[in-house]
Image (cartoon, rainbow, N blue to C red):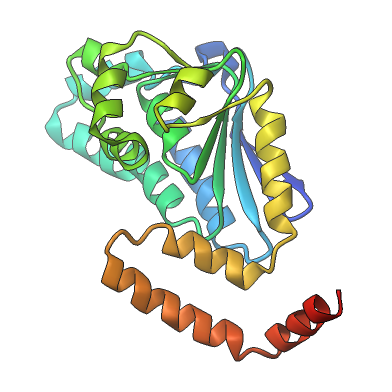
Amino acid sequence: MPVNVQRHGDVVEVTLDWPEVRNALGPAEGRALRLALEACNVDDSVAAVVLTANGKAFCAGGNLPEIVRLAQEGADTVKTAIYGEFQGVFRAIGECPVPFITAVNGAAVGFGCDLALAGNATFIGSHGWLAQGWIKAGLIPATGGTQYVVRRGGQQALWRLLQADKVDGPTAEQWGLAIACEDARKAALEMATKYASYARPALRALTHLAKIPDTQQHLATALDYQVGLLTHPHFAEQAQKLLNH
């Protein structure tokens, strides 16, 4: 089955739907997910994207039989698949112009752990957990997982995650990686729905600014955004409403 895409007003829910393989991804599944995310990125009506999964697992990682087959075909095939389909998913997440929220209600291992942490916010439900996974197969997170962990929790979180067999929601929250909750899908959709009520230009600007780590570049970009927002007629209308409130 392809990736399922459902609209909730201006919120798009993208659902991994390969429960028979615990949502493990091979090149074909990676391509389907990448295309779904790229479609969200070019739709100006979208206010937020929520990534969920059907079945007991969020994503059990890469589909090992498919990965073994790729490896047997040689380095060029492996490189093409990793860059085009697997890393392509994460480029699409990185290019998302609105908040990208993941909802982990089951296992998120290896590729799935990277997927869970790649966006702007991660909710982990009572049955959800993270595991680095790659190192047990003698591999590394080629889809950016190391960067995602360090960006949120710092070096200590990276090496704690590498040591742990499972990281549940409360632990992930303590490490700064995620938000613990009872039902991750419900919590993620509630957050996304709230965001959809905000002014779209400001929401998109904040999403962009959150991706700029360099202070000088961040301030320069923020200045450009703020000048445009302040001089737009909509600001005067909103300011008057706040004054009259």
